[in-house]
Amino acid sequence: MEVQGRIKVIGETQTFGNNGFRKREIVVTTEEQYPQHIMVEFVQDKTDLLNNYKVGQPVKININLRGREWVNPQGETKYFNSIQGWRIEAVQAEAGGENLPPVPPADAFEPAGDLNEDDHDDLPF
Image (cartoon, rainbow, N blue to C red; front, top):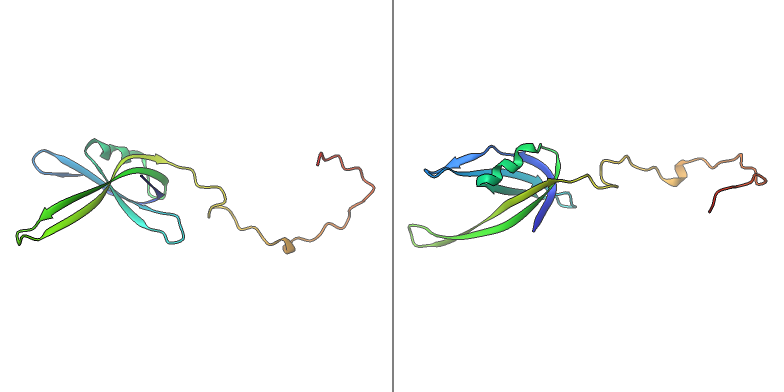
């Protein structure tokens, strides 16, 4: 699976426990009608994959969904999900996207008035 969007946040690498478990989080905002802010975690040696990326950069992240079960001290079972990234790559902004200036309507242009019908047109179409 994959998530594509612009980087909103890149967190610092965090280390947990005696064995040095490492985790780093990134938030990507999707570019769709209703943008979503998706938090993806990279763990262990994958945390270094985020070193060359910046906030605002469009990226595609390959992910795995992870789920786990936990029983609290009162005996209630809880379930937790996480989105874990394993590859990230920069993508080019799509053509026709929001970065292009708006095109004025056709009636905003004045018609050409100095056309000479007798001139030879050498266009191939």
